[in-house]
Length: 516
Image 1 (spheres, helix red, strand yellow):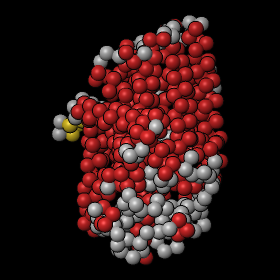
Image 2: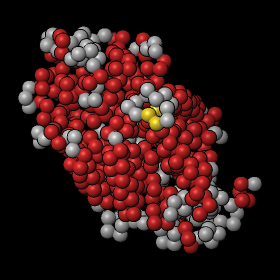
Image 3: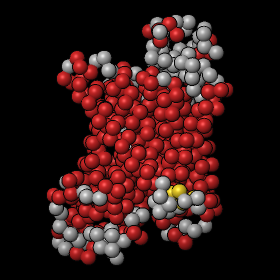
Image 4: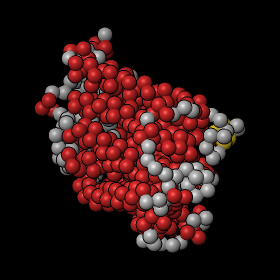
């Protein structure tokens, strides 16, 4: 029946298939891994979350990171396998559409876009504040116009870098990622040695293997809140998949980069988190038990640990980390939007390619513009709302990662029982990853409804819930509206299970008979 429904479409032969206009073979495996790591922004992620994880679960913060890593790794397998047969820059949008139809696929694409836009706003504010710290102008942190001007400047700069192509972006990211890893590893080693010598905050504390044991976690509510935070610190590795059409050996390299980068991140996160817990302790005055220290634990330990040069060094590291992530967040959202434009799930302008740089021209500029508007709007309304964006991103991440995991299981359903490898890699692993993320999404959303969750509330509902769930519901409204304006995609005419994954560059979809 489904075959008959699409019988009127012209099927493209392999000789007809070309790319969307993106530049080919720009990066290899090292570059792909680097982009994945840069997108996660390990220095910023750790600075922003270790303190809050410690407040929620104390010394079990490393255990939560391990638990959160499990669904991330399982979903990474799903990304790898789907990319192996469908290397498309639309990733979750394209795969979700092919597996479950246009409505689910569109929402997966929106989940990616929404999380990216929210992060751009948050990252711009972080970059702005760290810039003021670096130059000793902390007294201007309360001046909204100054903070906004710096944040917007960074968004514009990173949008320009992204617009100019992947080659220049990758070269820049090599250096930024190297700086982050070197500084964080040195910080961890010095912190562990200092704690062992009894010179940590309040004397520090000795390491215990129980810190890595998830069974030591007893409070389910605290665990789910911490889990969503830990999920955020891994988010971004899938950028390696979003640039798959520009990667050499596109069916294998991006998937490998995704899996490798998640393992590297887990190793770094455990090392640094254990070191910080040992050095800072959980004291409610000077340690991680004080909520005032949670926003940036590196500020708490930098100077006493590394001396007068330590604080500026860590400030610079987090600044560079956040700037790098800002750029590599615009990158995948623009390519996802490009795919949506090509397949007519979004206006045709989204499919425009820069003839000079062979990048998504319109989509890149628009992502920067929307991120700027969202940032300025939230900043002018309330700084507390902007702080709540970090927790809200977790919902969007769990949402579109979950769809990708289920899409893998459904797409390969006829192959799952053909071998032991297929059973685990194509079936069980993605399914478990999807279930864990779905459970985390539901439980977290239920908790976020409370007005006491986060820093803000509206009409008795938590601001984190409004931002997280509200952004997804807003996507549903946009989807319904666009389905009335441009129905071909939603009728399954422009992208379905039999559509060649790369479309014809010369003619475009408008010129394929049967598509209008």
